[in-house]
Amino acid sequence: MCAARPGAGACDAGAQRRVSPVTGRGCPRAATLCFWQTPERAPCPPRELETYLHAHIPLSRAMQVSVVQAAPDEVVLSAPLAPNINHRDTVFGGSASAVAILAAWSLLHTRLSAEGLASRLVIQRNTMSYEQPIVGRFTATAAAPDAEAWHQFVRMFRRKGKARITVVSVLHFAGAVAGRLEGEFVALGMDQPA
Image (cartoon, rainbow, N blue to C red; front, top):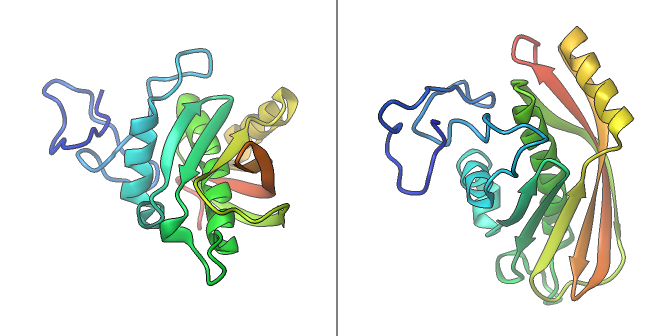
């Protein structure tokens, strides 16, 4: 498969060439994300998703976001305090929100890719609650929406080329919940206007 790997400068010889649903470009720049995966198969390698995020969403690299887990039912991202610190020596609220959004976006992106659905995925609105200050490395965990909501989302996307779905992402620090994001995302077909 033509999935970008760290240090890869071109597609593997004989690999099937794919085009990124985000950029419309082919290999070598993190062109695909686990297109060979399906929800029933093994999870996407975390390093694949991390490489994809850093290549296509540069803020994730600047924030030093790492992927802990990337599976069709759950994505877990992690970020350190240092590049996300505020004037009170805690994680800046905007950074915490950005990591939570990235986790939810990554979950949807991974699931849509697994279904073979090329899309432009954007967040339309979100609410964020902060439960406690974060003073070190933290995680954001996005869990798959319930099966019925996912089925309706995919069915609408296939029918209309556009669909909305809500995803929850929970921030954890030191074993406790530190915040919660609820985001509404829109998937647009590649032929839909932005």
